[in-house]
Length: 213
Image 1: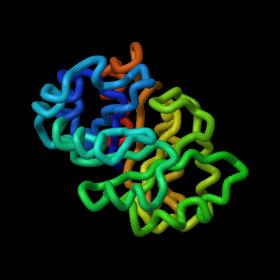
Image 2: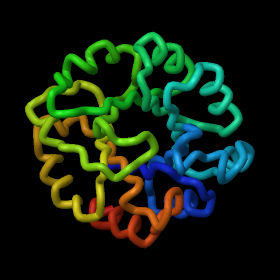
Image 3: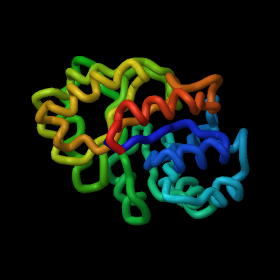
Image 4: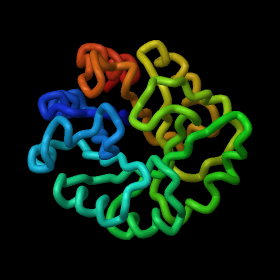
């Protein structure tokens, strides 16, 4: 199972993730987030980060030009759209780079209806918790909402995933909907403070989730 660690603010910690075999590191480009990347490092430093790890830029209702400039200046590989972006907006970004569209879900949502217009304009989906602040709060996402659905698009599972959820993730991976599960996204449950990860805790999560790797 692939892993994305979001809200990264330190190059040395991203390098440690790379050494662990983590596939994705998320950088938040939303100024109101406590993990807003430019509070911690300039674009040139983000761009210098190398390795196998994929750098993901997280944006919330940003302008197209702002996103594309960050992609170039920071050497991003993937863009995650976490706001109220329309299908047409997603399509503009997807013409340039891989796009993950985030859907914030509550129990009353018809998920298949909510995602239907985005199939052709996003490369992957992510499911998170409705009502959680942008940038990671640790609020749990109820995975039961997804069971019985046929997503038909690779998706990330997000929303307050912690070390205690490893066994639940294994169980979820056996559900038919998980045939499209692409990766799990972790953030605030693995922090010492916003943007600074407890790397031993992350390492333990990686090892427990993927014991044979």
